[in-house]
Image 1 (spheres, rainbow, N blue to C red):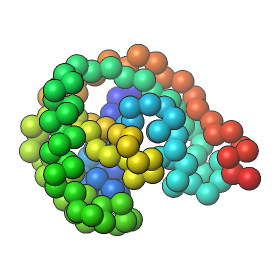
Image 2 (image 1 turned 120 degrees about the horizontal axis):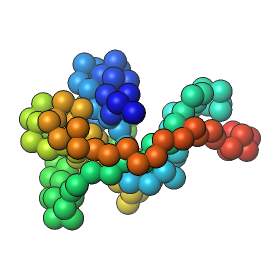
Image 3 (image 1 turned 30 degrees about the horizontal axis):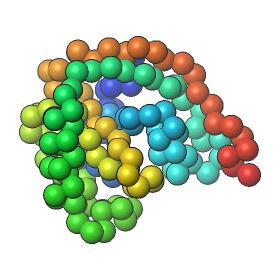
Image 4 (image 1 turned 90 degrees about the horizontal axis):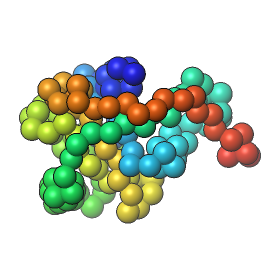
Amino acid sequence: MATALSGEGARRGAARWNSKGIPVAYASEHLSLAVCEVFVHVAAPEEANDMMAVTAEFAITESEIERQKRWILDRLPADWRELGNLATRALGDEWARSGNSLCLFVPSAAIDGEWNILINPEHPGVGGIKIVESKPFQFDVRMFK
């Protein structure tokens, strides 16, 4: 499932945490948050064709997770949730270019208090990510009523 970790989609177009040209794979701590993050960007279920739910494992300590969360929260401007906020892109770009860590926990703009995970596909540790499961995913059409 190398495609899921390639960061190619994000590299082709800017997103909340990266500028165009910077490869980053976006993930969430839970499938429900990942679904919500995708849902806020699509208007109809047919816009989300060929989706896969991928479960992955990688080694990271609780203290490293907490350090990352503090690092990002200490640098976020008050208006970070606004679409097109260049400050969040700059932070993500800085992190990705540094190569200091395989992943970075970032707050979800869609669900307050939840966390997404950026994965740096150019980090040497990316090969240590274990894909546990990969299965097709479809939205329940009732979500679009």
